[in-house]
Length: 592
Ligand code: FES
Image (tube, rainbow, N blue to C red; front, side):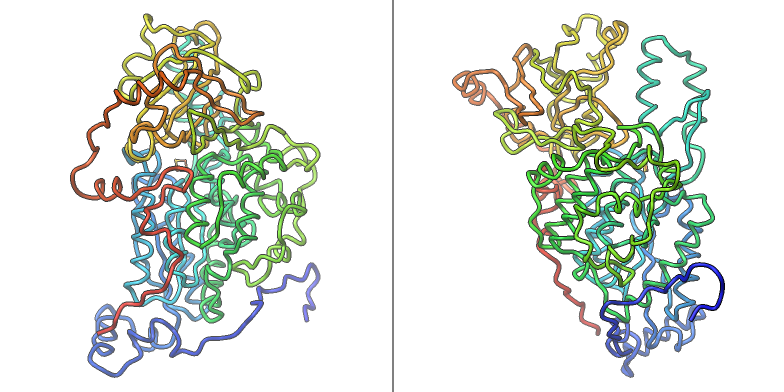
């Protein structure tokens, strides 16, 4: 009974609130026994001032934190972990912070994608090897969300995701600037003499003005939104700006809620179903999300034992236009999206395409979580209605043809409409170094009709599947006013970028995919409506070229790189390691 004025806010209630007993807690195996091992475990906790009753029979919660000083999107997560712990302690749990690999997108080379599976393995094994009953996962930069979730899915103990939150809007000379999106735009303007060196330097200081992840609908915000719609986040948490006071409150709520989830045994396998991945696919398209999402979502689905394919994503893109008017496809930024109602408001817009019975971390269904969500008055241009998309060309198109027998992707909503059907001669770069050396060479034979081709930038060739797919426009064409061209590669592209870039060509060139056979001057046909990517060279000539092709030297001879090369799958399968793909089974360590 609520006798205060104002709306009644009901606490989360589990759909099946069966409580574990304390000796069913995983941590009880470490701390609950009277033998020498139990003695040692408790004694070691007492060594650091923790009383035995704090760890005996209370849920021990891992706070898996991807904080580091150089992971700038996560730099506030060290402090935010204290809010999470406050929530855990208040609910009767006991927090243990476990640092995990911090994958700051901009700083980590060759690419954070090279380490996504490393983080997934680390997360899974951190949870498996320690006396923990559940996990609060703290990340947000592009690969930390899928990395942590992949690990949690395979470990399958109760887990909740705390997104780092986006940066505040950037402003530069009266223009709202989005991270990544405007970097490339102004760089092209610098190279074509439209802005000065000093303006370029001033932009550097204006672009990123607070903690948090990129403020566009890039990969980070796409993936945290996906985490939320899959049921891993508290409703509406994804878009809370990192420096908003609501963010630490959300973090405390998440810690508090996770303790209840442990007692309810509400674990990822109860959240993840074919329906929840279908919801994620619908949301991806309405967001106008990053092409990287296709790779991560397929990887997560396969871990969860759900068959999700590129073709299914393509079909969903044909049904749902882009409704979120955020850069790089649109005009606004994540802060605007938050004030417009955030993800819950978007989900209300597309509820006809959702299974609202999907279970979430609140213990309620997705439909219950969003029942009261609305687009804020005056924000209809930011979160559009289904019949008024910002683009009906789609967030994703999957292309096939003799150049991409296993598929390639493009984001039509962020590409030039006039190039959706285009045939032009190839200008081929054998790898990134070749491209960097020649792209601005005045002698390069290229015009606006040309199709720029980059080889050897895929999962094995990059190595690590770097975001090199948005090849720069040659300087001499910029000077002619050209701002977009058809570009084709086996690389990925930053979710913050835009352009007519065909990406993820599979099989990749490094393993002898047809992309390896393209030569300067070959005609290439792109027809997005027909989902076609065709190399206009006859089969006999291609057979001759194939006979001449020699596999490049392996990229690695030892270490993690060698393991990566031996086991990473191609883009259409999610680039997971083949030995990690199976749905998780909880292989508990012996306690001795
Ligand atoms: Fe971290 Fe964009 S660089 S989210």
